[in-house]
Image (cartoon, rainbow over the protein chains, first blue to last red):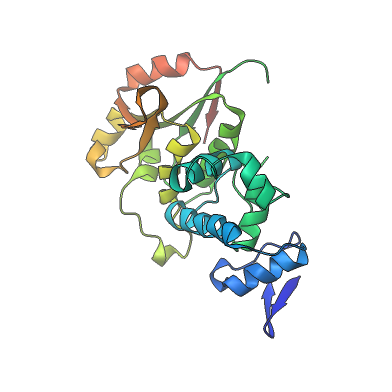
Length: 110
Length: 135
């Protein structure tokens, strides 16, 4: 499988996650979101960029519980709660945001 | 799950020759979602998993040692390292990753997760476990 952005095809796995995370760029993230009928706003990008930074530091995508706690610490309690995150990413903040961030599915995703 | 059990993951092998170390770490992270009482122990060559300054460029595989730093976020904060294994390899706790966690009971003060214990002490700790998984 793959996704085409600006004339270039990016390989994805059967669930739509990017095969090679070093190929990621924001346009790929937006294109993936469009396939899910989701328009990415500033608030979405805040979470996506946070996940990319977390992955860079720890080499894993965090479980939802860990993500929620860490977002709260960095962006404040009004954003560090599952209601806010599920409103942004109704398919699950871990699963959906990681996909647009070009990361693998979160470790400990249940 | 109705009751909390004591789970211990025993890590005995060097990090990159086999898949055991990474598999163990993944199971720990997945298991942490079930809010059990989790501890890790590093024995023998398993100690090398926690070594600072790992570089896998020449091996062509992912250096997953930064992931141990995430254990605190997953509330895994009892990490036992066997003293005899450290001594036998000429290592001290200063050669290991400085793993920490935030203690929610003490205003999120940062505390060390690694505890160096003797083989005899570790045997007692293992004795208190409900489930021991060896990797």
